[in-house]
Length: 219
Image (cartoon, rainbow, N blue to C red):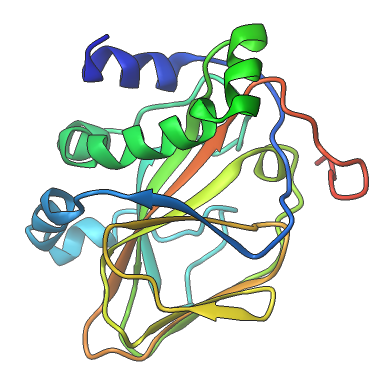
């Protein structure tokens, strides 16, 4: 199956439910982030200010900007909506998407879920920029879709002065390293570097995956 076809299928699939996991971070793998970095560095400043609200529709005053690649304002859990910026970034981010999808769908549990319910899919994707000197504080997610998707961060532009904290544990993640983060816990990205940092943020849904009743909050 071609990479393009696999990506199109992953973006067009539909289904329900993913889960919280035991821990703050889980390493997914690594991929070449250089093509994505090259495209990011060509972006104009205006590109980062086309959307001035955060993912929940509130004004951004936290030193961060976002470019949506796959997103809808209703935060629905199926039928992902491709944004115009995906046309630019689809090709360079493909190696990262492939590693993440294979990690979740290629495990024994993932293979069983795929066989029974069908292939997983990226329900949301975005480029997140955090200005130098800024700290992005994010509370634990509680919405229906967010707690049923695997949240993945991939630093594209970063330095050893960028600290990512989840549930009290802090990592400095190198560019191209792919980590799932537990979005059911509070998170903080602190950029102590001299330049802005950029993460590719993905949310992946494995269809049919159960949600622990004590962490799933509908809304």
